[in-house]
Image 1 (cartoon, one colour):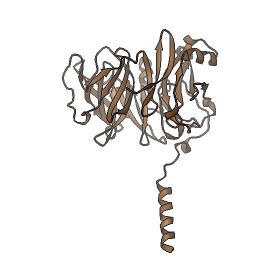
Image 2 (cartoon, rainbow, N blue to C red; image 1 turned 30 degrees about the vertical axis):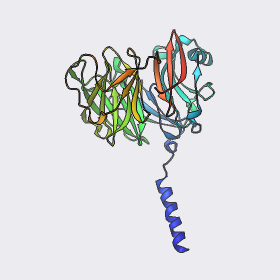
Image 3 (cartoon, rainbow, N blue to C red; image 1 turned 180 degrees about the horizontal axis):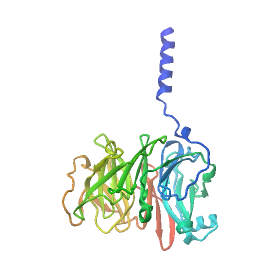
Image 4 (cartoon, helix red, strand yellow; image 1 turned 60 degrees about the horizontal axis):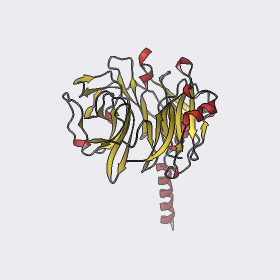
Length: 356
């Protein structure tokens, strides 16, 4: 009896000690002063990270949205920009959708929006629920935390000071530009937020340009496990794919990435997700010129780096998904589906699609 009781106590203590803390516990009520709602990324517990390029800051916001079933959600919203304009009391032409992100805890989709244009544009955060109904998230009432980045770009480079972000294993990874000589940055911020640090300066070999580049920003990225190592897979303009082990991205370091693919010149990647299909791993990349590309990651761990000029494409194999046209943003909804933002003929749609 005593042995059984002692064992129960030990097991109870083990459960308590290994339980993951709720990420919202570090967030506090206060005055939130977001100037621009840009890139978005979710963590567990309904915590949403918002990149504010005007301030060079990352906000962690408690959305209070932590229950649902993304596998049962399906979106088919036509005229989204018109609906948002009517809700916000403005014209559809004054609505700019900067990013979308699926909350994995609920399946609801969040949109970062600029209402208006230029310096006077107001940041707005929108939630679209499983019924397809959009509503404004009142940021002034949310618990939050803020991390201000160091050495952010200024002037014409202010907008790409934060180009994309992601949460993984207790860290927020931020891509963008700094005001340093080696301007392209990948920053790894501990969460709950501590000192933002200088971040790592990253350089790449650009196969289509035939040159090493230090001032070209990562446009979008995803984190992957490659041979047991947590890795950033970054997509650049024109369009190299490059890997960086997260462990190498230390403050003040200069890190050279491994270029593993060239997807074609004259193009800017817009968004990227990773998924599994029929037991194999893929990336789905949407682009300004090349449409949506399905990239196989087979052999990625042992792929030879691209170190010489290439004409056209090289490296990882990929195919164009012609059924997905005019996709501007995307995010994974479930193991089998994604949500895409389609913009064509001056109107936007939010649609659930099967992963190809």
